[in-house]
Image (tube, rainbow, N blue to C red; front, side, top):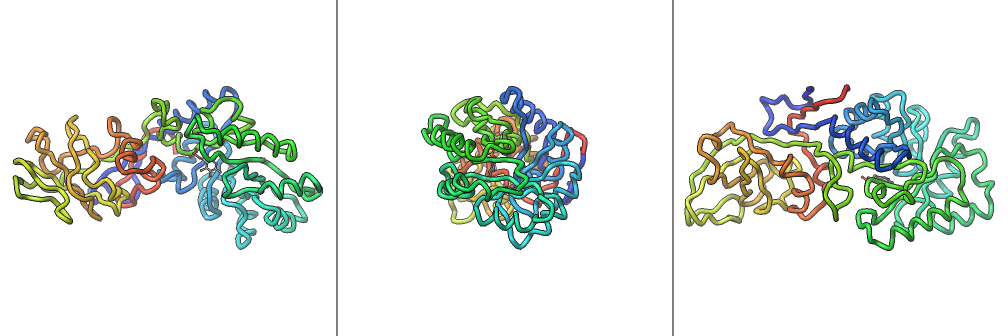
Length: 370
Ligand SMILES: *Cc1c(COP(=O)(O)O)cnc(C)c1O
């Protein structure tokens, strides 16, 4: 067990990150891929869980290829992982060309302009790059017209060392969406024009769309961290995080009283209200006001009133008196109260809950070597 950042005795809450569960999730994905290998996407600081720690654990579990979004993320990750491939999803940053070279970062090129810039930059020695094709998301990647230009003039790619040809699914978490099949057909067409390198298509949810979507290498992110990649079915992944906070203060309340900012919760019967030192500044979203629950001593207790910047309030009336004293733990996220449930209550998705996890928690990493 290693703790980082804020020491426990100075923190309002403890965030535990189970590296063994992340590695087990990687194995679950590999099993689903049935022989097709998988990279790991650990952008946004490993979906908020710590790119270095997560990256080292996954590397120890056999993952050799990592994707992040920004060059800055790649530079940091390179210091922690000298011997893996690091790819930069967000396209070529023209201001950062030397950084790709110095830190051995592979740019995911997404336009003829970026391809030309990279070719010019590595005119002496070809450095590896990826090509991203837009198959319908209208975000990054070669648009159809530029793909046609390459088909007409393949020499545009001459001198490039293409490692991956990839595209990204827009609706993979909706297994029945017709967009999946449309993008698949578009990617196959693109692959006919760009047959070089390794073909990579599936994100976490895409892995569960079946073997047609697997190609040569998958690129999962969120499922590694316990979020359900098949929202219409039970979660095949293991829970990864637990967030526990101590009760700070208690208040007796009764009819006529109200809790917190805006008096957004009216007390209707004799109640005990507990205050905990977690708030929206910690990524415990304000949209959880009057909507979340926590678990104390195995009992689900409702969050009452608004989430403030640094505090939340729980109605702990139903908890045994000796279990609801200041200093006792409440589980805000964890088994029985998983990230996906919290996300649904906040009107968002697990991605947003994870990537907002605050920096004021005491973080504890369990399992896996580091
Ligand atoms: C974020 C991202 C992924 C990983 O997606 P998940 O849904 O988290 O599995 C894969 N590919 C690209 C291009 C991405 O931006």
